[in-house]
Length: 227
Image (cartoon, rainbow, N blue to C red; front, side, top):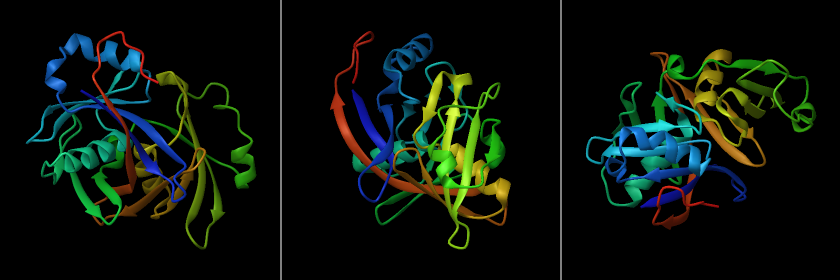
């Protein structure tokens, strides 16, 4: 069964990064998983191998990832919605703590688990809005500007051509690495309307949280197009 959720949805209901989740991920062989993720063409697809232990794998259309924020937030929210007790998830990178606060789902990860990316600061949020893609030659570009530095609000857009993702609507691993990079917990307004909030911890870990909503549940057969 395929569940589609939007992760890091903005307060006005806009934005959110689509995510495909298979809670019965064990039904796919290791060889099939990359093919399914490529076929679905979401920025990430999650296969849960062990519901009780929270063991899972994350794939982009091009490769497997050891850690990614929006897939972990979305999967934690979905597991809880389906009646499973969730206090941690276990992607290949390590144990990721989970907690729930009001309408927000939070995960805690290590910045060093995030993919390597370049943080490109611009002078104004209008410059971020005007971008059409990653600067030439950059495979993972986290483009940002202060929207209101005093209020710790950031405008960002993320382009990941190295993973066949022109633009990522909401990048949890990017927010984790970015908060560590600037040494501040911030609220990130990304893409067309996504909202991510980060918090720093004394041990160097970073939490990222946001809202999630379910948009579709359906049977999936390999080779079936999903809108």
